[in-house]
Amino acid sequence: MRLILFTTLALSMLSADSGVLDITWPRPNKATLKPVAPYPVVLQEGTKNVHLPVYLTKSMAYDKNMVVVSGANFYSISMELEGASLLFEGDKTFQESVNPKNPEFQKIVKASPTVEYIQAEGMMTAEFNRHGVNYAITIECESPKTDKRCTEKSLIETLYSGLIMVGGRP
Image (cartoon, rainbow, N blue to C red; front, side, top):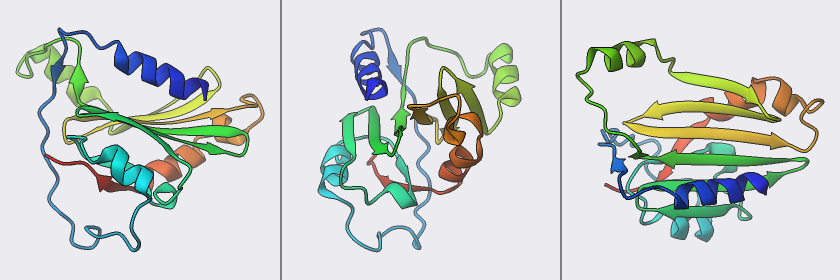
């Protein structure tokens, strides 16, 4: 729950000087266009005005107890697991303008991994960029030193590899 409040506060503090990243929308995949069953109302309503692709792990997309916080340029979807919290975030805002043709920027982009797994402060996080949007999946454990979900990256890798687009609009 602490993670949800922190994310909400951080997103609300975006300055007026921030900007919005351009999105390269993915081509529709006919196999995943329609879900097997309708997504929960909380997900449909919470993401209907989000102007970026919304991703969740397929196994979590039908959790009716999720909490969705969103705006046009970001979303945060959290759910409680036994002994842990799970958070999916997407954000297309930035705080500083960077010229993408700048040689230093190009070096950084080329050196960036597709997904970065980070273990810090009792949490395991997968950070990645898709379509020009910054995304993160975070697991926060009640027992961070002994809970394998926060000490090993196998669960976060599984969550990342199971992502599907569940919403968003241009």
